[in-house]
Figure 1: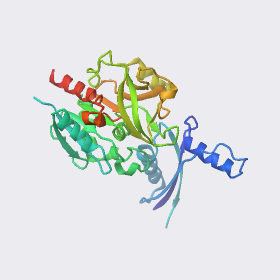
Figure 2: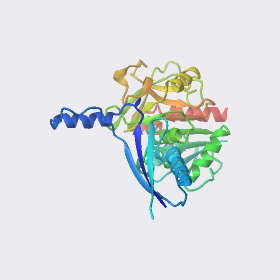
Figure 3: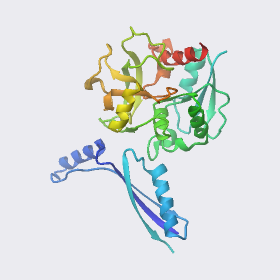
Figure 4: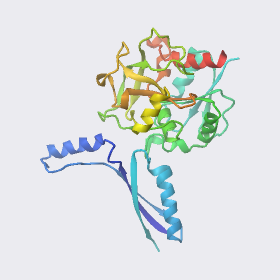
Length: 83
Length: 233
């Protein structure tokens, strides 16, 4: 079995009004050095597979077809064998 | 023969009854509900994907509803030329299903916007807009959404324009389009688009909420009457 950890980010070309609003909060807190806040998603799950290559394929499928929308999001992931 | 409308009900749909009511009581057409776990479209001639928060808007709006069993049948139906209209969350589902191009981003203001807006009709020669007379500079229909900020790549936008697929744009009451009347930050003030074949419409405004004269706004009827007109003539 493998444990997958996926990070989904908005494409750099897509505006992130949420990130901007949060960054305004940082300014109000007096954290004046904060820049370029962008909000994404972190998702983890297990893949019931004995084979790393197979597991990676499954994670890619899951990301491409459901977890991320390739029009506006990019994803990256790591997988780690769990005994 | 009256056309038959099918209103899909997802867990979290909340405009399904409004759509049913408008079609049945105001427009006097046949209508049935279609449960998302079914794959039978019950011989409907028009499929409505209603507004709401299907699957709690988890992950992305429309992302999970798109994999409901009924959606396979809806996608088949659309590919065969069947008429499909997605309203608000229904529009978001059509985008996720790939029946229409683009995505919805969070409203620029980050606010949920619920109000009447005016729409300019950019193409009156469609299944969905043929009843909107040229004298009608703008139609008044309410919106209610948090993610209606339409985005697509430059190529997609260009192709939408070239093929006259942009049907409705946010405007003022005289049909004038400007940033000031854009409620959510949509590219080009886009409020509704059709696919290339012209049989699938997605729109953020809610025509079903502007049908009953008791509500003092009836411009939503134009969209349904256009479909009925197309199917019966």
